[in-house]
Length: 161
Image (cartoon, rainbow, N blue to C red; front, side, top):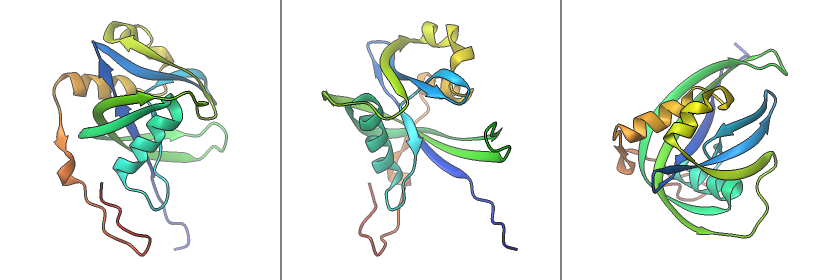
């Protein structure tokens, strides 16, 4: 069989400060949407490295993951390609660190801090249904220790972390 199905692996960060969540407003093929800092896992990086990198690229903030909130799977029909795409999303929570004066990633319009009520009120503008589900799971106290993540060493060096 020549066609091997492969899901797209993504990571996301839940960052809360004083009852508000750090979100990004971004341009998508479906228009302008709200999302957590999130993106795809790059080759040769661990899930934790990916969420740190994506958060910095999309928000210009350092992020230190402290736990996993959950694993999420979603299937969408791509409007552009008419291909069914499956996403496996690993959502982390953690601590926000320093902010930097640097351009945000391509497609990111701005970052903003939103309350839970504001997130609920804008749910029709979320990148996906998973955005609010992740916040609900975070607020419910769902946490998975980072020690359960393991990336085997490779010829490219250690990937744990």
